[in-house]
Image (cartoon, rainbow, N blue to C red; front, side, top):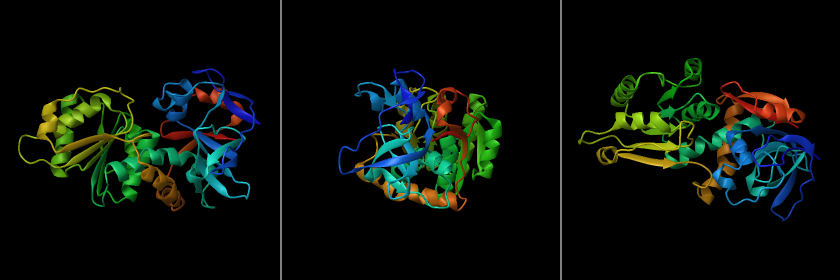
Amino acid sequence: MKAAVVFETGSTPQYADFPEPEISNESEVLVAVKAASIKNLDKARASGKHYSTENEIHKPTVIGSDGVGYLEDGSKVYFFSKKGTVAEKAVANLQMIVPIPEDLDFLIAAALPNAVMGSAMALKFKAGIQPGNVVLVNGATGITGRIAVQIAKVYGASKIIVTGRNEESLHALRELGADEAVSLHLNDEDFKNRIKEIHHESPIDIIIDYIWGHSVEMILSALKGDGTFSHKTKLITIGGMSGDNIQLSSQILRATDIQISGSGLGSWTKQESALLFSEIIPEMFQAAVEGKIKIETENVDIKNIEAAWNAEIQTGKRLVVRI
């Protein structure tokens, strides 16, 4: 079969022949793949730098961690797999398959789930979002941040604040449900003062963070209590685009009712992971059918994977490979 294959760790995937996958147990099925998205997760795993690859022995590998296609009975499905998905055929676990609504385009179905994992899991399980909550999305101009804004709206957030550097994208987020935008181009004092003002006017319940680094230091500083009772806030970090480390004063933790945690592969319970496939992704597929969630894609054919791998994709779009 044809597939997008990494022959050496860190190298660019090649359009090449590769042995067809084989089912190894009763919990697996073959999928005739029609499309698969390329995410930061896939690039990190291909480079050998993602924490999920630490115990893997590298050999020629098909890239991709999820995709969409048909089962042997003709069912239209989304699936997740660590065995490679950007290929004509892939192996999927029966517990990690989601039916795709007939009215939902394959390319949208391929693009959406990873962003759902990177937003809904944090909002629902780590933050315990409730209708009426005030949500701040830090670094919201990326593809997953845009989806987080829309899912927070689906979950009933009463107010959504977004931060980012791309002014045009920040403005566009208002059309997706954001109520207020704060530019990361502001100087530190102006940024912190604006977050303080917002927190005073409508106390922030949940912070979903995609970039970590200095922006989180400023947000935490803005929320720091003064020794009186403070509002309970949960900060969930999902990405580290601005660096993996921050300086955190213990005074912030002592003076503020804040809970800091992360959301990603390895942080979810087995039950939560199961609910991702049985409830959350199906719910978001339906929301996409109803126009409540929108995602834009940049589409390429699998034979052009080498050129597309390192190409610059427009902000807010997901790269999807057609097979």
